[in-house]
Length: 384
Image (tube, rainbow, N blue to C red; front, side):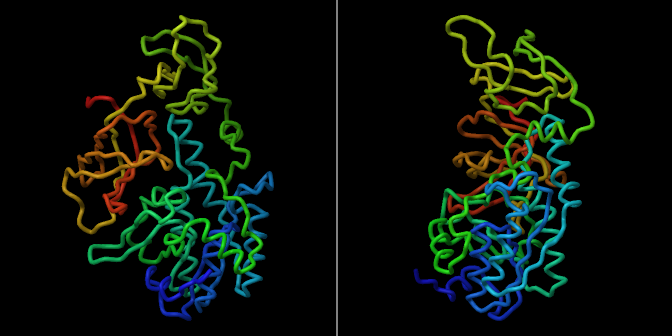
């Protein structure tokens, strides 16, 4: 496989060859290849791995755990570059884990990866990079970064299946000025080929899972272990107020959930439809369930809007949106309801099921450029 380093430098607006650059290395194949590419392109590469939590298990589908730190260290040793390990456990717990737990307690469905990017990765790590006199911070995200007169923009990666632009919607212009994402122009298959080319031990290492600090994927047990009480019991009701069961805490539920609601054994008519979680009433501490058609939403309310352009779009504009990372793009109309308060309303031109507070809604144009996005506070079928 031929690697055109001049093209990589040009496409990613990299600094002068020979400059010092810091690469955030999780121990996976993506960040390892990012470090290898820049090292072989002639940069003074320094690898840095964040220790974010105490891993109870040493599975291969985590990141930033003990085995991952070891993998990152070994990659740096093979490349002949310096490697630092930074203990960010306290900050990670405060800004990511605590936020994750509190969100579920408040009936929301959080995205810890975005919170981690906003805080530990793109704040603490950038500060560390500057202390080392690094010119840039490089990560293994699959996204394309382009500079223009009206700001720095992000575009979806060439590999649609690996694109991570959704998780970077809240990144600021100040952060983007210092960040680089050299993998956005590659496919995952090409990255693994490059890893083999450089004889990296992580060439076939499986991708990490979304929630790195919950290796077994059981977020409910994780939340129970991280709260002071066992949760407040409440009712599980239908839309018309019929009580069908009880719950041990609303953190056990997410909007759109079908399995594990706890009322599956209820008998009904032969045409009885499966129950889904339709709403989480935090004030009354109850879970509202019903048929899937009641999950249908056309309107999405947002807070903390972030736009990449220096020129904020008009109060109402058309775009494509994602309401979850793995969802397809949906045509929509976005209305900025309050610029100073950074709130907005999205009108979907086709219905979406399972709009959940705490998730993100990200805007794209028809050229796969990220316009911006915001945090979902609510979804409705009709405007109130």
